[in-house]
Image (cartoon, rainbow, N blue to C red; front, side, top):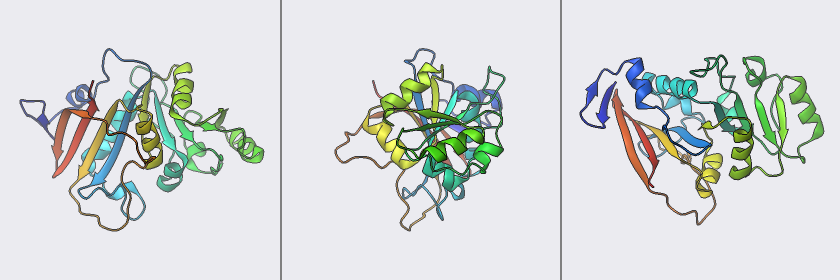
Length: 239
């Protein structure tokens, strides 16, 4: 893995240098939202319905590192189901336990027998609504999940709940609808994007899907890594 930016280029980043490359800003508002995605050269977010077909070894390494640096992993229920999520296995750096996975779902439509609940070291947070069926919420609680009923599943309410719990370093792993909502609310502080050296074609969607009329937000390039023809880019919102 080679660092192309910032200059000068640094070849063969070791683990410490890679962690420094993705360090959270020292001064920040809480919460701070970092988004991590992978896409093909032609903008596809999945291959055969899953993102795993796009990443390489370097992308997977950064994926796990960003989780280690985060205090919570925020993700939509559709992504949890499609990618067959389990719990994070590695502790957050500076803490004894891994970050919880916080799942956004208006219907609480999650399988209590899935790896999200059976293969985890910390209970997942299920962020849902009062209108979600009571039976589903009860089944999730029985499976070990923590059900959090919120008045709305809008970015301001979601992030306020995480901040109330002291979870200020938020890593969002998608999917496109959740990123689109965060973008529309101007709540994306940082985007880590792996561009896979692949033309995917097909009908796969983009990394973000949101309401029409959401303004374009300028971003500033903070870093660029290269590995096996893939680019791992890091952008922060332009002040």
